[in-house]
Structures are given as C-alpha cells and as structure tokens.
Length: 194
Image (spheres, rainbow, N blue to C red):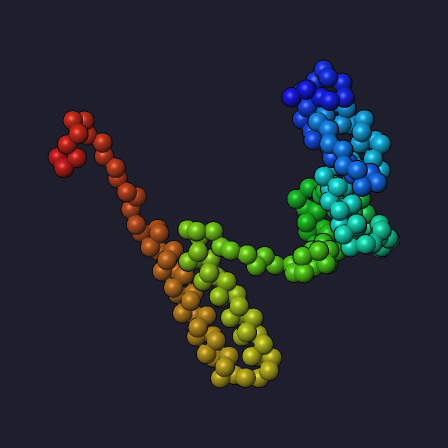
C-alpha cells in the first residue's frame, strides 16, 4: 500500500485522527508520519516512553508531575544517569540504575501497578521448584511475625514446615543431578528393538 500523502513510499503507519467528532484515517510512510507527528502536540512515536507517559497523564487526569529535586539528583555511579533524566525519558542507562534508583522506582511501581512484586502465573515446567521456594519465602515471613509476636509454638511449627520444604527442594535438585541424560540411539534399517 502506498502512502496517501506522497504516493511514493510504502505506507507503514495507519493514522487515525478525530477532530470535532470527525474521524479521518490515513495510511502514511515514515517520512510523512514524522511530518504529521510535529503537527499533533504531545505525539512522538519515536519515543515509546513519552507516549506511555502521555497516556498515563491523560488517563489519570494529572498533568506533568513535578519532579522532586532530591530524587532528581540521585545518580547512578556507573553510567552517571540521574533519576530526573530517567523520569524524563523513561529509560534507564545501565543495569546498575535498577540498584541506584531502587527506592524511588519501588514507589513508582507501587503507584502504577499497586504492588512491587510480581503476582502472576508460574511458567509450565518451572512450577514445582518455584512454588516450593515461594512457599518457603511466605513461611519465613510468617516465622518472623510469629517470633515478633512471641508465639514460639507457632514459630516452631513454621520452622519445621520450612525445613520440610527445604528438604523437598533439595531432593528435587538431587534428582535432577543424579538422573543420567537420556540416550537416544538411531539404528539404520528401521529396527528399533535391535
């Protein structure tokens, strides 16, 4: 399909605009799309983070939020990126930025997603070991609460459950290490029993 503006290049974009209730749809090439982007305020398709930020601002009804000057000055010691730069562009500079901006990013994730820990499904095949580890982590949290509340009998039961799950996890790991790899032999002639 050719671009509806220039008629020269292949159209890669489908632009739909609604102005005064009138919907206009056009198929555009990247060059013509870039021209149209400049005409539409707040629209920069080359910056996905900017698009998402615009959507969130419009959805929540909030304009651009003020950047806290203290947070904006937090700097990654490896790449030199500041948290203020991250807030503007929406992309981190290096892997160490996750550590450098841990606290403000946790607050951001909590505000956007309601939580800072993944609570989704476990992929098939990884289920048993992962679910045991998750249960161990949950029991460790309960153990800390029980000890803090001085419920020592309950804490002992939880401790025993943690030990049992840890032993089960170790047995699974051992089974994987001990089990020899399967051998598949191919013999010519189609006689698989020979």
